[in-house]
Image 1 (cartoon, helix red, strand yellow):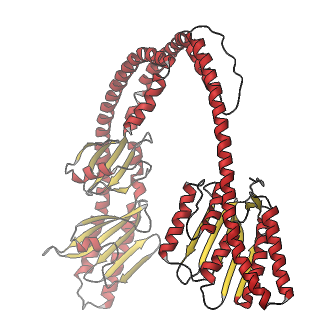
Image 2: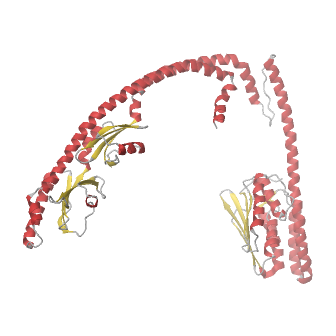
Image 3: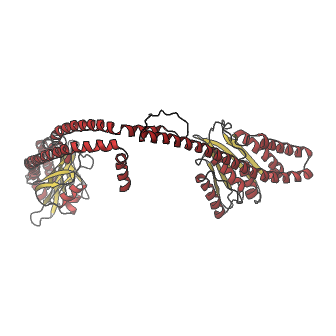
Length: 596
């Protein structure tokens, strides 16, 4: 592969003196400019990289501190509920306490949650208090306010209790714009989990801070879990790569910087939430800073390149002008059609080459014409040889059938058969030997089937279905009759009971599909594979005449189709033992009526 690529790259310069001169002078002028531009661009990129790293480290530090303060404020809301007198008085009631007392304490807790909810701020959507030992869940939000008894741990609290965590932050399963901040309530004596307090909070509370980190719109700042995977990300156009996520999961530092192949990743922990603040800076942002320097270098390099190309083209033109003229003269020579070319009239070596070249081209054209006529005559002889193999095969079968009918059938029936046979011979003798209309071929098949139906009477069921407008398409003469003959000889005549033969002619795009089906004995897999192999080889060797084998009529008919229309057309066969045989003929929808 590399050798082919190298050859394609160097061939234009090996074959052209003009191209060699242009390439040499262009390289001498352009290479120094490219080197200087690259050095300047790299210096600018390094400076910009250092500036971005220092700026982002500082910004990540203050942003994480501010986010930590916001989470601490939310924690304070939870703590205010946890240390409230109303909650402690409710928990102090035993199970035997009067219902009225329990109702009063529940109402006091509910009023306390109401007060906390309205004083928390617009970023808090709801407050929940779950008491595990009492199977009670207090809910207060903008949509509902109720107290209910639950028999199992509610959804959203499983991670807290199953993994014995003190604190969780989980995205809302129904709304990605919200999350639940939940803290466990533990008994002082044995630290057993007796319940939990959960706040339903809008992520939008942190948008202003994240937008400041993403001020240019080409960065991506988001809040992540401990492994670095996004928990909340307003700008989802820029995602961290798999390499960055893998490295973030392995870091244990509170803050730092990670460099990958395509990005710069800054991270900082957000206390006391256990989350991380992540900022992704794509590599192209830093590289763009070097574009300004590169533009000036490109302008200078472009001017130098244009001047060198112009100078090289002028020198190459003067040096290689006679050689190029001779090459153009060679391009104008056509070996198929005669064409008068104007000679330069030179008397030097170039003129001698030009004179000999034109004489050689004239002799080659004559040789091509002779070879073409020889091949054309050979092809015509092969087509006629194919037809001569088909005619005796058909005549022998038909005459045997008529001989039996003369002694056993009425004269009128014999006359119809003889008339049908007469029409068939008229078609064979008078119709062109090349292509004929499909309707003429189907009429010939109708004469043949009249004879067969007369012979086999009610035992044979025959149907012909032709899509309208296809009769004017062209097909090689006597292409269908050998297929039907094979259906009788190799399929139906060996079958007991009722015979069926169906012919269907349809159109698919620009092709005519002729399907011939019988319900005969079919053929075994080996015989079918042999015939299919020979039909397949016809598509690769369409000019070959098959003159041996047990199915000579069918194979030769297929060969004629391929020889006339090309390897895209021909014949296919499907069969199975006891399942009958299906032959499909594919021809073009319109050939223009060419004959040969």
